[in-house]
Amino acid sequence: MKKNKVSIVVANQQHVAHASQICTMIEDAAKIRGTGIAKRTPEYIASKISEGKAVLALDGETIVGFCYIETWEHGKYVANSGLIVHPDYRGMKLAFKIKQRILQLSTQLYPNAQVFGITTSNAVLNINFKLGYRPVTFSELTIDPQFWKGCQGCVNYDILQRTNQKMCLCTGMIYSPRSKKQLLSNVFKMAKAKSV
Image (cartoon, rainbow, N blue to C red):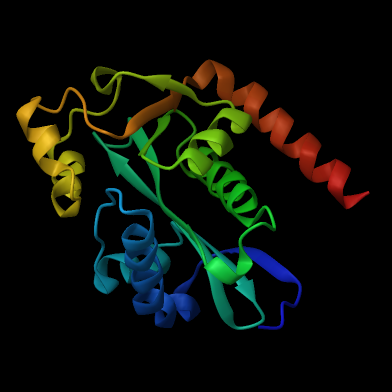
C-alpha cells in the first residue's frame, strides 16, 4: 500500500462515512491482540465524528487511524477512547500523534476535566506515560455507570463484574488538571520543534 503524507485532523460531518471501517479496524485489532476491547457501533462512532469529538489520521481520503472523546459525570471526566492505527501504518508514530491531538482537543473542549483512559495495550500505556499520564486504581476514575457499561463488550468483563469495578486486566491512567498546563506546554513545544 502506498503511504502518502498522513494528516491528523479533527473529525467533522464529512468523515461520518468512515464509521463502519473504524469499527472494523477496532474489532480486528482486538482479535489479533487476543485481549479485551470494548465494542463500538458504527452509529456511536458516527455520532462522535459528527460532534467534532474525534480525531482521524488520513492518508489522502483513506482512514488509517482514529480516537474519540467521551465525557462522564457532566464533563468532570473525559476519556480518550478507541485509539486505533491501521496495521499497514504502524511504526510511524501515528498512535502518538493521534493521542497527542485528541488530548489537545479534550483540554480545549473540557478545560476543567480529569482526562483518563483504561487500556490493556502496552503501546498505549507507553504513549500515555510519554504524554504525562500516571497509572491509578479504578477508584480514581469516573463512577458513572454508563462508562463501565461500555466495558460489557470486552472479553474480560466478567473480571470487572466479579471485582465490583475495582479492577480488571486494563490499567487505568489519569493526569490531574495541575499537570495539564505542563502537558500542554510540552505538547506545543514538541509540535513547534517538529515544524521547524
